Image 1 (tube, rainbow, N blue to C red):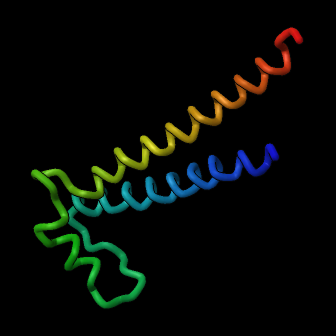
Image 2 (image 1 turned 180 degrees about the horizontal axis):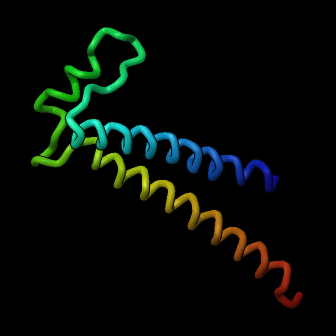
Length: 95
């Protein structure tokens, strides 16, 4: 059962790292003023990055993603640490 309880934390952490890397790349693209690499090759990425929807109150949406994904990664880490602490406390507590 322990493996099942750990799987969502690992999944959350892995997805948060992927989101963090993508957000970091897109934030760099925004501030460096370079064209983003598009997988499809249609140029849609450049259109989105240059649109008015790419910023919210003057802040790049990708930078907001950095903050959000950092929070998710931190929460996955803290949940993991608290479960380790609880597991250790249960094991060492007097019966």
